[in-house]
Image (cartoon, rainbow, N blue to C red; front, side, top):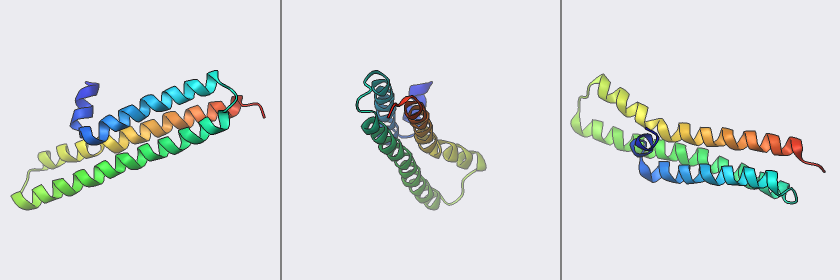
Length: 116
């Protein structure tokens, strides 16, 4: 199911987001284990997760442009086809926002546990 959604949302955008999710999780775990560079880790997580959100929305915008081109070429489409296309277009931004939330949660916990 998960990999079906990755392919459905556009592999060019979804697989890099999946790699970013793994990277964010690794950075959060590293922040818990290695306490000496927590500020740098927090900064990296912040930048990477923001990139994930932007990458997801870029995927949506490019997908929507392609969909509108197809609709223009065909002329008339059914509401069900349009709804299915809109659903697919939201997969990359939602995944990017999910990664952002995971990263923000990690940043909150790392900041809370940090000793200055």
